[in-house]
Length: 528
Ligand code: ADP
Image 1 (cartoon, helix red, strand yellow):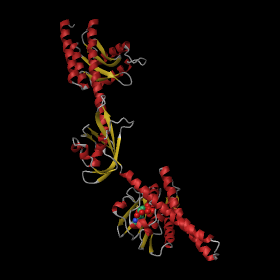
Image 2 (cartoon, protein in one colour):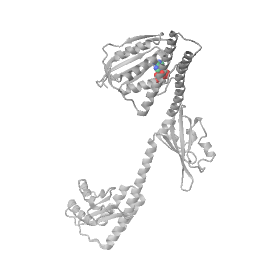
Image 3 (cartoon, helix red, strand yellow):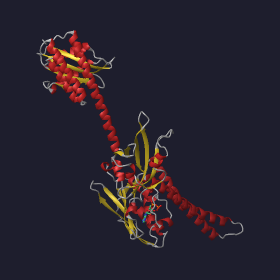
Image 4 (spheres, rainbow, N blue to C red):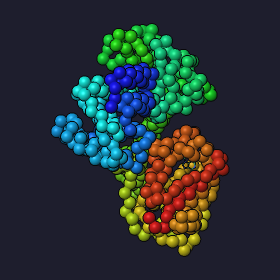
């Protein structure tokens, strides 16, 4: 039996423990350890545990005295599951008492008494402290009241620690989002010093976060070329204090990176105001807009090349048709024949870019291409293509290096013909001085065991630089050279070829040396 003065001393120690825990510790585990230890000592208890509320229902044990074996915890948790009522989310004390009885037997049959103290915050049961005693300790209503007030203290400590954990968790989550965001993000203090600098920004600027933090915005963001006012100008003109509905600021231009290379970026600055209306931070979101710029450039190049591509044959057709229609001249049959042939040829020339455009837009809309798969005799397909192109040029010689026993593959014949036609047409277009074009094929087995046929088209033309080799398969991309400006094309041919080949689970690649010629290889699996 506990003597009252003794109890008071313990009560004071307990209070001291808890308040120390609250003031000195925000670590939830440590708070729980102290609360449990103090309660066990205070009640001369044998063992005990603290359980916290589960998000769904019931309690789960988070801390036990060392003499409760780990393998019993799941059984105790199971008992605690039913303690919270479904209807009002409160503790059902009848069930709790019943469960405590079961727990006593489970833990040690010699246990005589259990004391359970709920931690309540704003009417919500937040947790439960349970201790088990060997001696029968009959607490008076007054003792229970005092114990409960300790539990309330403990509840505040737990609640604070939980809040702190949640805030800390949220802070870490935000820091991780910021750190791993694909966009560059930095945080500026009101004097425009950098206080945060994420990974993406390290990559974009070639400055490390360690170096950048503490520097001013202008030391790191150096514009090589700016399309409008920068942050400083805007701030001198009153930003971000003007009362407009959108208080963000967007600046776009070429950044001069630390390593001297330029990078096209757009920065969105957003002010963050404190409750007193003062500027606390500026959050700068930095985006690499190189691809967007490229797309814009390619689009304008494309528009001019497609107009050129369409305009020339249309002008020729119109000229020949107008000539034929003249009623002051009578044309003899061979002339009519010749002029009509030109009209037909030019109409054919119109079909190709239009067809390419249609397919390209279809690919974009459908995010892919559909294949009409059948047996394809590549030898025949290649032979026919070479025959067709031979008639179009006198300057070029053709070498045919395709084994007659090349396997028949599964694929879309019409689309594969388009790929071959495109490679041959390019080989001629980009070999303005003529030369030999070799068309070949061979079979091989991949390390995966799959059989492939590789066909190639080799020319002795102008060749393609390494930088351009990386981009020629992009939609609308054309090498910027005197020759390509003179040569008709839309920059769609190789893009379509790549899409078609990849739809066959194949590969297309180029080997080339400027001034010496190019070889395009297309590898296709024998069975799609
Ligand atoms: P287009 O020929 O209509 O411009 P492509 O997509 O077929 O479009 O080719 C893209 C670019 O790749 C061409 O503009 C050209 O500069 C380059 N290219 C393609 N094939 C060859 C080749 N055989 N030799 C040299 N350059 C080539």
